[in-house]
Amino acid sequence: MQNGTDLYALNISGASFVKACGGPCTEGCVTLARIGEGTWALGDSKRPDAQPLRFTTEELDAAGIDPARFGLNV
Image (cartoon, rainbow, N blue to C red):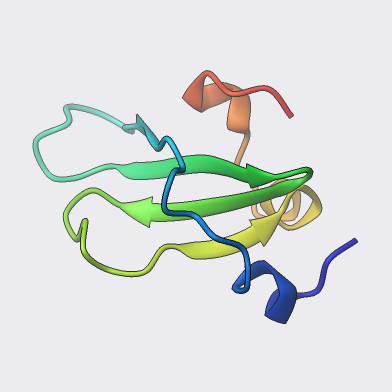
C-alpha cells in the first residue's frame, strides 16, 4: 500500500474525473478519478483548479465514499 506522500507523487494529468452529486448538480459536486492501483484523486467541481486530494481505496472506504456511486470499479 502506498503512503500519503507517495500518492502525491503520482501524475494525474491524464486522469478522467467523474461527478457524483447528492442532489441537483447546481451547487457543485465531488469528482473522483482512479489514479493507480487502489489509489484515487478526489476533487471539487466548484474549484476545478484546486489540487485534488489523494486517497487509497481503504481510506475512501473508511470515509464512506464508494467509487461505484461514481460508476467506477474498485
